[in-house]
Image (cartoon, rainbow, N blue to C red; front, side, top):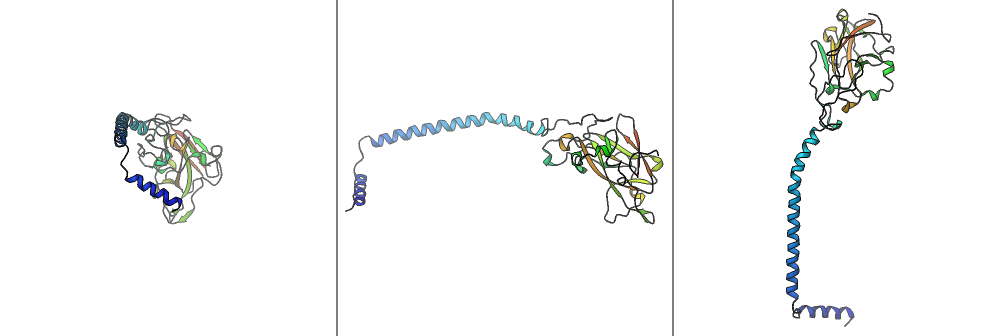
Length: 261
């Protein structure tokens, strides 16, 4: 019999012998103490959870209705020019949730461009301000450079190609940009672009209502991509209107910069 067999036999023998006196009572006492500790722990956990419920309810409104970047408090752009009008509903979630809805409606005879139709923030266009023409809260982007705000290419039979340009608007501001009445027979803004790139002046409108996003969404300005038709004007006069402010008039040359209409 080797050592392993001797150890196995000893273990089997001890297993069938009567248990020592008091062994079972000791086991029962340890079991009762264990159950008492477990019961006390469960009571403590339930008490903590019950106390946490009001806190959770109190935090939910703060998470969905607080102030700041992730809150829903009112956000307006810093005053730069004649307007800092709030145009969009405050952000109720991070920018990854998408653009906030707008309360603004298009002015009569204009196209609406609000935060739902934005095309980015001004930080994506390095140095654009120096090469843009500003009118209050509106920047006609790259308008000082020749070729950006050009006339449309004529296609014959009263049709022409559209020109696409960028307009930057101060965060939180609402502004209406219209072509002056005397020039409306030859200049119109488009509501959108079609696949053929063939348009007539009847397809356009007098102006655009811009409702910029809050600064918490895109930053200091909101950039919009808009299209227009220019049937041969070399100098296009615009009027920029902001509620509660005097209209600002500015004329853009197709050769870059401002001009006298």
